[in-house]
Image (cartoon, rainbow, N blue to C red):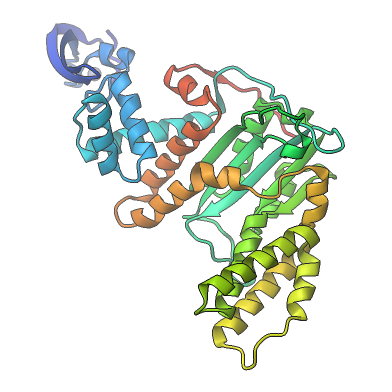
Length: 395
Ligand SMILES: [Zn+2]
């Protein structure tokens, strides 16, 4: 064979035995071993052809270990889960390295413009006026702070982005019809926003987002996120909505500052404000808060939270017209993207700071996003069903 290291001729040396971890336990096998006299390195080409990992796992065990490492809250738990469900004993370090190795491959393939599985056009659902609607969302995790003056959110922040086709609200579904299953593609990693844009547009193109009549972008108002949507999904009639549930947390914190000691009153107050926000929108809610009969003297916590709410609402009023959005039959929350990846990615990044480097976190984000994406994506990656995409820009 040709030596993969120096490209000289490497002669057959012997059949060498090796031990593997497979789904049914330890496996012994023999494969041809070649030795290169020029550079002194040996190779066993069968291992690469069969997809044996550097830590001597079969492809099936690699896939399971990656899943366990990706869905559990820690690699240690992942190793336990793998043992419990498949009787495969791997160390925490092996689960970690295997998960991260797979994540790096996913990132690399996406970066090269590879598509997992065949192209498919989603059947976009309609809104109240019968227009088909596609949704896109992007969110930063790990740090929630929005620095004054809008400090750039580059560097070590993880983003979670998605393109999705959620079920229309119940009142738009024909009577008795079960809501259709959510279709979604997610991306996550420690990207700069600029890099993420191209990757997300590719995913959007692969599911035929261009064919949806209307595009809705949901964000929590974080730095650069609305701009990201405007730049990458640049239609004149792009609808940008501030995630309702994010706005609601500001009101909940305000209720907390108003009634720090009384949980019941605080909950009632928060619910009342949130109902108003949904029914009347951001401007009416802000006006109501300004006219509110606040207790005198106000506590420092209350003053601070009130200022925060006012600042946040003022900045985002143009995308808080919730009653109008709901009347159109659009979604007002990006819970889809949050529940898919954010919680776990966020939790792991926060707990992870000391234990893993950025490289590991980036890899883990990819495993998680791919696994939570629509059925077929994860399978296609592992079955090596990849094709190069024809890149094209959305609008
Ligand atoms: Zn060589």
